[in-house]
Amino acid sequence: MQQLTNQTVSQLADAVIQNDYVRADVGIGIVHLGPGAFHRAHQAVFTDNALALGGDWAICGVSMRSRGVRDNLAEQDNLYTLAILDEQPAYQLVGAIKEVLVLGDQREQVMQRLTAATTHIISLTVTEKGYCLNGDGLLDNAHADIQHDIANLTEARSAIGLIVAALQVRHSHNISGLTVISCDNLADNGSKLEKAVVAFAAQIDQELADWISHNVCFPNTMVDSITPATDEALKQRVADALGLVDNWPIQREAFTQWVIEDHFSGPRPHWEQVGVTFTQDVSGFEKAKLRLLNGSHSTLAYLGLRCGFETVHQGISNPALKKLISTMLLQEVQASFTAPDGMNVEEYIHAILARYGNSHIRHLLSQIAWDGSQKLPFRLLGTIKDNLAAGNSIKLLCTGVAAWLHFLVDAAHNQKQITDPLADMLLENAAKCSGDSADDVANLLAISQVFPAALAQDERFSQPVTDAYIKLAALNPQNVESVIESL
Ligand code: CS2
Image (cartoon, rainbow, N blue to C red):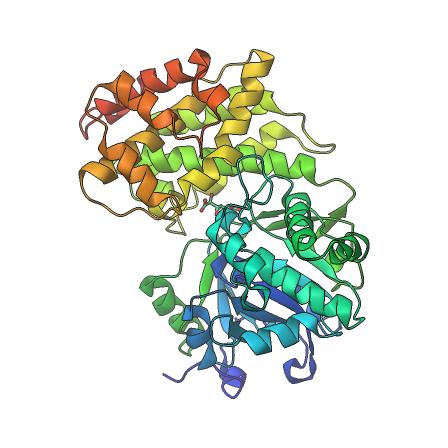
């Protein structure tokens, strides 16, 4: 079978969706940092759809370190397939990404793209840890990458440092400002990014920091679409559907949502005509999505792994687990925030549960379990803090926290690796756990990089976490239902 390339596109099976634009004629207008699966399944697809409406809005993807995306896509002219796996599977050819660069290998080209007058947007999916923030959501000046970049800006290796390096050149060469769009699952992602970039720039040159404040917009966004990692089964499925080999397709559910604060410095693609929502205030949507979807996703991941399940579908198909998740959402999470205008929270919750039940995608719980130290504060701890302040229940929210602690202890005691920027420290602490649940929980809640001291020392929090931890310690394949029901 031949490979998907510019030359072979004409042979694609008729059923494959293709947007109508001349790819060779479209210039690059967006530089995206972190062109991983989520970007390629989400923003790049909205942009591909918008390209059919005109404009030089092709994307240059920049990987900070890894060469995987560039090397896999190089052989196929950066074309790839989106498999939409739901009741009605569909396949779409995506050509919006015209170039992929790796910062470590191609710094000069990356800087040329970032500083080109024709580049109007820098967007990012670099995950929570890529922002180098401290527990207060501000730039972490003690972070090794930030210290390195402040001392060696021309060799910047963090996203924040790279953006400041590019903005410095734009400013000094009188090139226009632009819009920097965070597409990661952080509350107030744009505002946090802006503060971090300006705080970094101020340490280099206060005038540059002021110029950024006046010439660069950082809209807040909410992004949503469940995107499991690419596996061999997907490659096979896509080859069967296309009649061509695609080395690096991606998959997602049919549901996709992007809400962007209408706060731009310069032009943008015709996103509003292809389903992107522009609004004055994203924070309500963002909070709702982070707390309802991501909060329950992480809870399901750690509890589900503890029960011995592998995928989201398996986890949510267990009646006891589904009941716990839905009660947590309807009773505890819903109480923690004010719904944005136009959002029916109960419908939103039922839609999320239905999405988890999608049997056409295989979404590994272990993928969601990555980077717990970075995710828990945004997904569960803020909700817990707000509920405590308002006198609302946090019992079920604490089960996810307790299951994460078991996840760490299990990894430490069985010499398993975990993916987390704080992995060494977390596992070192978890290895000290001796089996006395109360002591073990106290020892782990003392990890101040994750749990603010005031919360860790609050018995209204530590007690239910300990209770859940004790019950989960007794869980085995024979008693899953009864232990989960007892939580
Ligand atoms: C997931 C998210 O991996 C994870 O942590 O919770 O990637 C989730 O699938 C997306 O945010 C859905 O929009």
